[in-house]
Amino acid sequence: MYTEKTIKHFRNPKFAGEIKDADAVGEVGNMKCGDVMKMFLKVEDGVIKDIKFQTYGCIAAIASSDAMCELALGKTLDDALKITFKEVIKQLDDLPQIKFHCSVLGTAALKKAIENYKKKVSD
Ligand SMILES: [Zn+2]
Image (cartoon, rainbow, N blue to C red; front, side, top):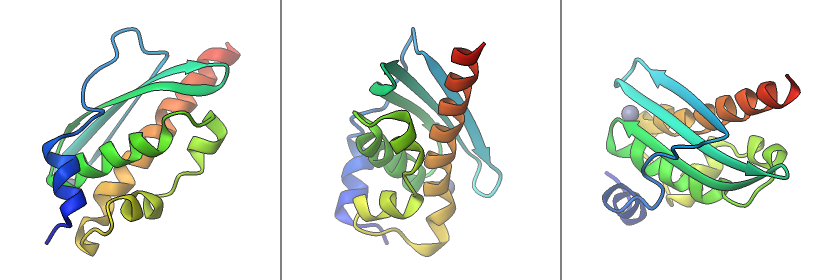
């Protein structure tokens, strides 16, 4: 059902964890399979310098969070906002269609974290 790449991200997520002094945090959940995702960002000069996630969820949710962090690291906040779940799926080679909502969660959590960061900075 899952591609080799998806399994690899799931078994060995490089970005799993927490950033204690994160500049921004975004949290989202999905009711469909009970996934909850928290995204931590370190931002410097508008660029994502560090990114970590905590996910309580299915294989697809964890693998796509990890793949999304891989895509977002080193990007400017504005470029990171443009990451779509389709790019995340491409990063995993593919994802079963019934699991698309899990990859949407990753981009949603990132978006939320960036929004929170922008709010904080403009205060
Ligand atoms: Zn899921």
